[in-house]
Length: 62
Image (cartoon, rainbow, N blue to C red; front, side, top):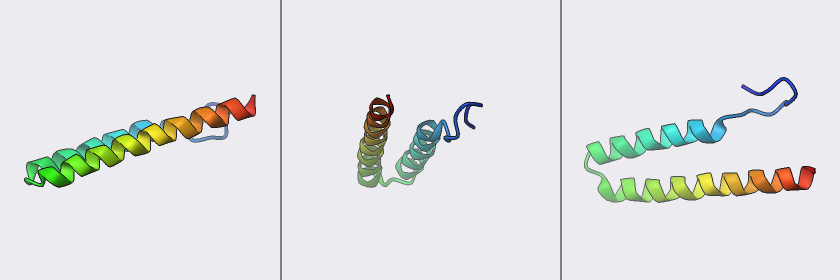
C-alpha cells in the first residue's frame, strides 16, 4: 500500500480512475450516454482536484 517510510495510502487515484472507467463503461453499455458523459466530467474534475491538493500538500510539507 504505502512505502516503508510513508504512513499514507498510495495509489488511491489510480484505483478511483479504474472504478470510474468501469462505471462509465457500464453506463454507456446500458444506453445512459448523458449520464456517462456527466460521470466522465465529474471523474475528471475529482481526479484533477485530488492531484492539485496532493501537490499543494507536498509543497507545504517542504
